[in-house]
Amino acid sequence: METEILESTQIQEAADFLTDGQLVAFPTETVYGLGADATRPDVVKEVYAAKGRPSDNPLIVHVSGPEMVWEYADNSYKPLAEKLMKAFWPGPLTIIMPIQPGKLSKTVTGGLTTAAFRMPNNAATLNLIKTFGKPIVGPSANTSGKPSPTLAKHVYHDLHGKIAAVLDDGPTKIGVESTVIDLSVDVPTILRPGMITDKDLLKVIDNVNSDHHKVKAGEVPKAPGMKYKHYAPSAQVIIVDNKSDFKQAIAQYQAKNVPMGVMAVDEILQEVPAGIKTFSLGNDVISASRDLFAGLRQLDADHVKFILAQGFPDADHGEAYSNRLNKSAGNAHYKN
Image (cartoon, rainbow, N blue to C red; front, side, top):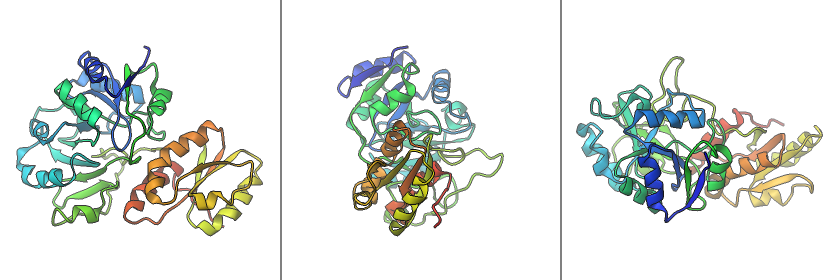
């Protein structure tokens, strides 16, 4: 199969591929997703196969608006869910709710009686879903476990020859996946942090549990990214939590005499010795989140063996960044 790169205006061509039961990667404000008809279990299975993704890892269902959600979700959750939809959709919030019996295949839900729904804040993709006329599943459009794609070329690198097309709308604006909130439990619970924080959610609903759920042995995860290794490049990532430790950390890893890279804000990169591969995370945690996955991919392409990556305080927007970076590093932190 030859994977086509479609311009963001080629909506009908992308919709035709979906109608034919093929896979199309699509842009969102967070990362690129891998789209398929959410109502066809046979096609959804191809998503798992293309990514090499475990089949008990549920998929997010992308919709063009709230009205599409209620064709599948349990309507008794409508009052609470629509408060969140009104405040944050279209946008980087995924909402988990029980579904109406038989409305979505267990291939989509990972065998659960709940499903995750999101309305992405991207005009091309919203037009695609409207043109197609049905919801589309959309896990990140990458090889499972690798850094998520924030450019069409990232998708092409991982999945060319495995999918029909990539709808290219340039770089994503946020760069880390959506916040996932579970409404199917007694207290709405954040299962995955993102750019919408618990503080944001508490402005709209009365109570939020922000102690992120840990998946126990033998338990099926209710949201993507909870159970399996994620976001990891081939290089070993080492998180440097303190700016003052970078000089010593660089010297220590230079002594190993293997290629290394540094991924940090510009202030730190100014002090990195010549000859070391670097990637700029900009000036703050917002830009760092946007560019995190691109940096991991770029330094991997530079064939480094170690990546020293800057850590940020695990609070507010830093929580989403820290969550992804810790998973990519396997929680490996520099200790002086």
